[in-house]
Image 1 (cartoon, rainbow, N blue to C red):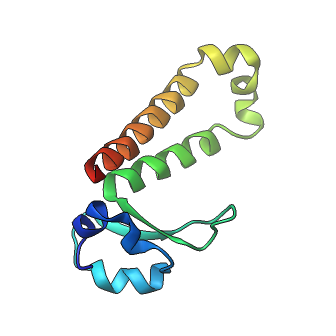
Image 2 (image 1 turned 180 degrees about the horizontal axis):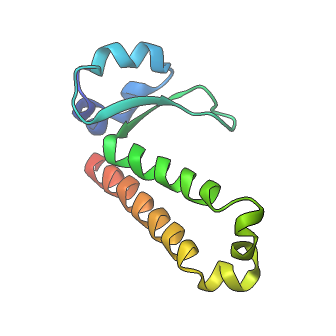
Amino acid sequence: MTSPEDVLADPGLLAGRTPDEIEPLIASSDGWAVEALRRGSRRDLGRLLSSRQRALLAALDEQPAAMSGQAHADLWSRDALRTAPAWAAVRKLAGDALAAFHAGALARR
């Protein structure tokens, strides 16, 4: 395994490897990063993410946090969840992130 393209062609190459084991093998590949899962039963296992996937996930993580707190309490009503432009932006980011991951899955086929 020498590139993200190798992994896309055969995702099994990542099986049982930690991010620390994978990163040196693909560190010179532009636009890709190795991440560790932070939650769940597969915590600490490595994932290979494109720069676009990472950026979308970061934005999706930051958006609701920026809308938190007493100053933004009005955004957390049932009506606001359906109609507020801020929540429309969160939904758009989520859709874009899903599409980015779906595109990666299609590239592996």
